[in-house]
Length: 283
Image (tube, rainbow, N blue to C red):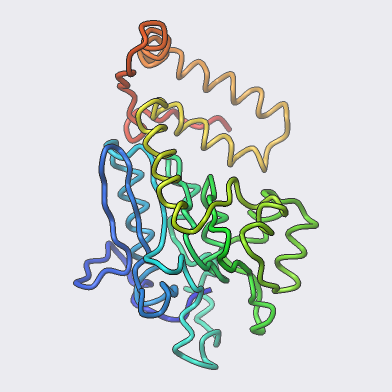
């Protein structure tokens, strides 16, 4: 959970000293958590700015993949502790949410990759669990340490973590408050890849550019939504939804373009728009 900050205000954030840097190039949006003086601790408006960046990436068809990273040497040190003992003090129950983000990465209709290039503690770590893929630095420190601060894990980690890594691994991370390294995260099933710190962001960007060039944006958007939905659906519901959504995609020109591009050994020219052609979702 984050301490009180200007991120809680309504509407899009317009700041002169952004805490999230946004760069879009060749279909890839790079979002960089940027409070280097406090190891990118979550505060100072970061929650609202990051949510706003995710909303804009979701709505912009020029963005096909999103990569989230931090200004070195950390990814995100967690809650800003500058308030001392009041950091986790009582909040207004009508406005407070432990989720911290109004628009989490799983709601973005693009692949979201966490390039965890340094320490990710507390909310900094639970943010990575909301992404689709995690590439982690081998020597960095990771943990949901809140039980050692008198509170508990946030960012919907009690929903994401057991589904990603299983109940046993989730219990070890959430209930002990211990700190782990990248190899531990791989062994516990939390991340997709572990690399030397300096190689994390280049690897994430290489994967992002490959997907941006070769995967149909509308197909990715639909598949991602169903993938995250699958956690709350039974097998017959998934089979029905896959069939309905296949009909939507097979009726789109991209279904022909993907096959023809493959057979002709050329890059695909996708037409699908996640922002305007996303299907009505099966109940």
